[in-house]
Length: 171
Ligand code: SF4
Image 1 (spheres, helix red, strand yellow):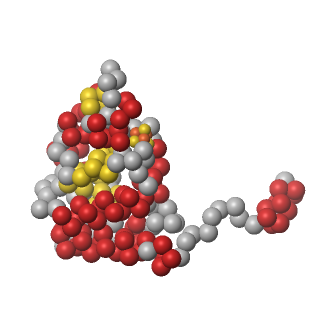
Image 2 (spheres, rainbow, N blue to C red):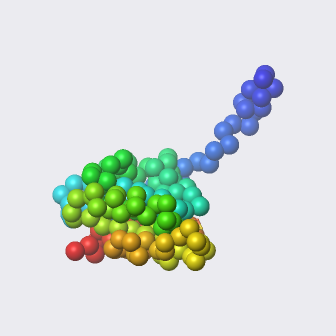
Image 3 (cartoon, rainbow, N blue to C red):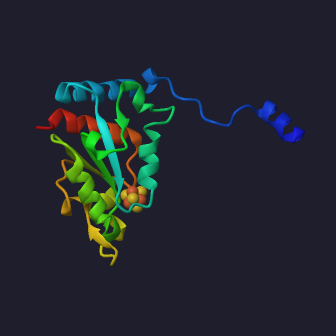
């Protein structure tokens, strides 16, 4: 135990340093998303996420939006537990037969106006899982999709850019 403590003191933390916001232009991108949400909704954006059958690779990138690097919540954008509080539904993975009902119920429980973003190649058309006996298809086969963010998986910056594009172009 003592050896581990000394090693920790000698080497310092192994985590990466967070980049300065100005250095990567990230803060401006997130602020733009928040401004667009307030212009569109009169308040910040609430997001409900459904994993319809993904490998969880896309979820790791979505979770990163809440970590110390991206810290989405400092701008008021947040993931909510109930679809009744959500403006935006994000969906990952192919829609599996087991998750079909949950996805439909979540979508139907959301108040208008509401938007849907399909995140990742699997959400577009089933991706590498297309044709599986367990898969219904892409998200658009079940609910109307307003925006698709492709990639396997898309990174957090692509997710933020997608959010911004949706808010700026939403009817
Ligand atoms: S798009 Fe890639 S990372 Fe996302 S659920 Fe499909 S296989 Fe996984």
